[in-house]
Image 1 (cartoon, helix red, strand yellow):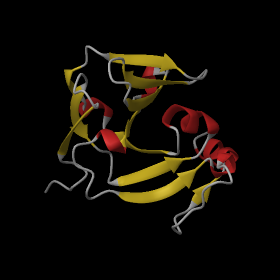
Image 2: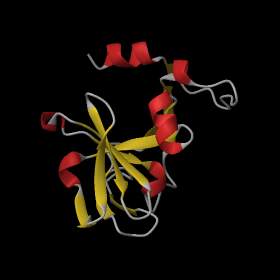
Image 3: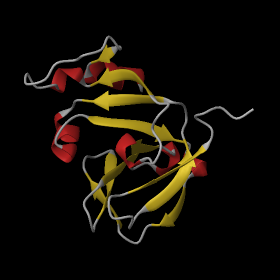
Image 4: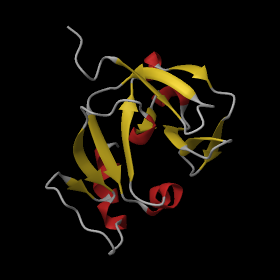
Length: 143
């Protein structure tokens, strides 16, 4: 039986110049508070990983990628500016993280944790009790 996370989801940018479908790895989302994500999205990034091999683009003519660090790139629509994806530059990683706001249906997703909380500015507070990892803890976990 297919779980909610395994069902195929659709998504797009604001102008529909980029349209995609794919399955989520699970129904959890993370909020990243690092300065790079906050500059990119004007606030914390809330995102979820897609099953890399399930992703298909219906339209991607305006999908552009920006190398934001030595290890990652960020995908966005070059027409409307919507932030859509984060991926590692290493193609072996097979990691594509989707901005939750780009999904057409995000009704059954749950906040799993906050990451890079040491980058959180003072002007907002956490309103939940989900786990929190610093940047150092996150990088140690993925090493």
